[in-house]
Length: 140
Image 1 (cartoon, rainbow, N blue to C red):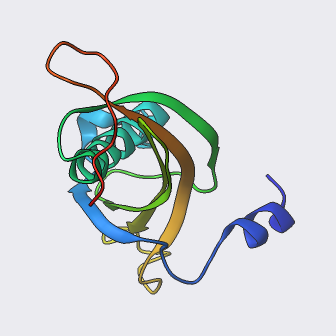
Image 2: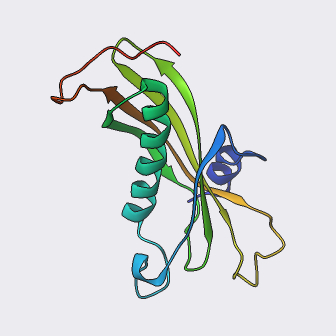
């Protein structure tokens, strides 16, 4: 990954509100101690689901993940923070911008950094009823 890509992708502060915070554990890592990208994606989906459910005032399911890019690896012991904001509300859909930032608590070489962005993506959720059919998003 080029330095230009990383510089262009990093912003000084997270975008949106803090939705989810957890610690990366050994069971979520490969033998080198790097956290699996799928685990990060799962945390983002959980955070997005929380925000989408609040906006939809009921059930909402993930239908798409767009423009995902990984900027930095996550390691065991990192505090993983998922931030999100609503980008668009359609008739039945909710588009969210989600970011994952890390607090490198256990990393000696990066302990001076308060936090940094590791990935971001747009998630699209659809509001559904009790039978799993699309329904209009309620105005909040």
